[in-house]
Length: 204
Image 1: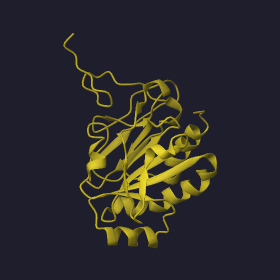
Image 2: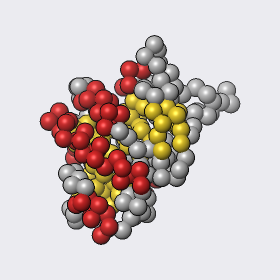
Image 3: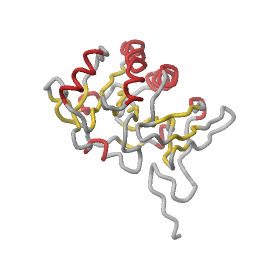
């Protein structure tokens, strides 16, 4: 008694066990300039943490339902992520003023192209940004998927305590709409492709 555990944040040193196969070592950097080391092993499940947050791919039994994410996209249409249930959804929080976001854009495009036929959807969430500059970013980098507009960071705030509150951060939702993976910081193509492929192979 007296021990408090909040799902997604380790308060007692006991955190949820993560899928060992996909916990590759990577140094990830966010726009805050803070860095964290992801550690993992193929010999058995280990916890992975960046800044006290769990990171990596979660076991199916340890996944939380994603909060409601909906609103206006940069192209002016309405999008509700519940409409994508049944697909694996890669959610990338980004901003055009964020240098790591600019660097990883081509990697996200590449993984999108390689996995869209597997029932994988991508959705960006553009936070605290200027719409005109953000649309220019999408056009010049030929981003093929939509981005929700989050001028006040309220959509990202729904993940407070579970994800960094600065871009870039990538979440992957499984086919049941649960948060199946968290990757703070910019990702390489290889770092994103493997977990997306494995989650795409899961049944709904």
